Length: 312
Ligand SMILES: NC(=O)c1ccc[n+]([C@@H]2O[C@H](COP(=O)([O-])OP(=O)(O)OC[C@H]3O[C@@H](n4cnc5c(N)ncnc54)[C@H](OP(=O)(O)O)[C@@H]3O)[C@@H](O)[C@H]2O)c1
Image: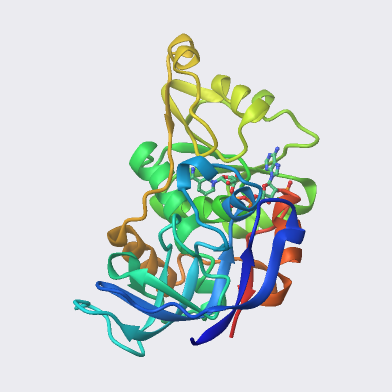
């Protein structure tokens, strides 16, 4: 049996359950492609799955390869694959219920695979699909953000936030982002019109008349966000459903988004990445064997932009 290097978990727990080891090399089934992984993006869902979060919902089988953001090259196409061929450079947010991309190879359904942006390398491409599509769906599909509107983006220096700031600017919105002191200048360079150091300023005392709040933090941050909205505005959370009762009480709307990968959106994102309008900020790049360290950084809650595992 052909093998490959992979980082797997054999049980749920802390970063120590991540094991860099030999694993069976997967084979492309019907409608699937075998992708040689060049880089895998880290997302907080990776360590949440590692800890056993949603194990009843996602029905993972152990041992499990984590990581649901990937950029690489198609090596083999399975039966029935029409739109891709061996040698194509691609990226994807693969099916989260199956083995992920902390490995030398991954099989992915053709419907989830898009040509990668040609103007950026695999390391930067691997950080895009999950976080950029989440920002897109939260701001545009759920939030209905349009040109001239005002948006408050919590966690603007993080994986989703860095894409949200850029996408909202591209749309023509006025963008206010929250981050700690060390990221204020970074947010302005990313395009934010206003920034708030959330550790020293209560954002709800300085922001008002916002059309859309993007909540990537939850808890108290979500709770304190109602009063910054205009009447009829909307709070969109990617953490948990905001209270419908509070939305009614404040005369605003609320929505919760859980990413559903859509190839048409990823293709639009690819165009923006190729034109330089959307950049992946790869704040940390580590070799595959250092997945534990990558998880520790992600779990600190203070990563800047994306954390990427370089596989090749
Ligand atoms: N529903 C979905 O489909 C979906 C999809 C993607 C992600 N998510 C979830 O969304 C959350 C964010 O994901 P992510 O990838 O953006 O995470 P991330 O990259 O780990 O976010 C880290 C960022 O959060 C900032 N931060 C921490 N506490 C903050 C606070 N109180 N106020 C403002 N900023 C704060 C940090 O900035 P400083 O260092 O400056 O403090 C840091 O830049 C995670 O819980 C993730 O699981 C959900």
